[in-house]
Image (cartoon, one colour):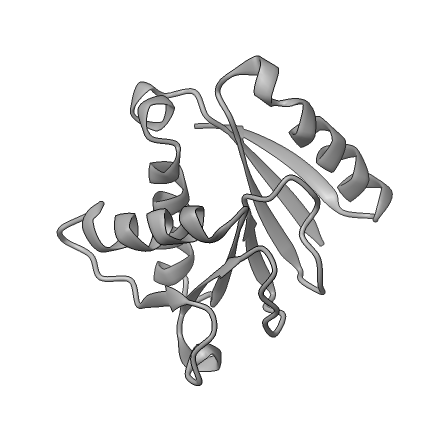
Length: 139
């Protein structure tokens, strides 16, 4: 089990943090890894959905908001807080708490603003406590 923390550093991700979410999603899709994106709320889920359509004109990533009958066959499922869905081996977590469920790998996007990183530190420690190998990447 692994938890990868991606620290936002580059100006393009500082200006639009959800762009990093899209880049990580693109990598998962290229590797043929079904992905759950756990968002804080419905508004963030819609923002991710919208950006996945437009961030890269050369790529198409099949995705949708959770709650349809074809959720199980959709490569990328965007799950707002409060909605339940089947577990997947790969999760991208945008929530304030550690990702719920069973998975092999979790991706965490860490804000550029140092004052907004406290929750990430707490999740880092919790993943370690759960036995995850925890790694950090500067993006």
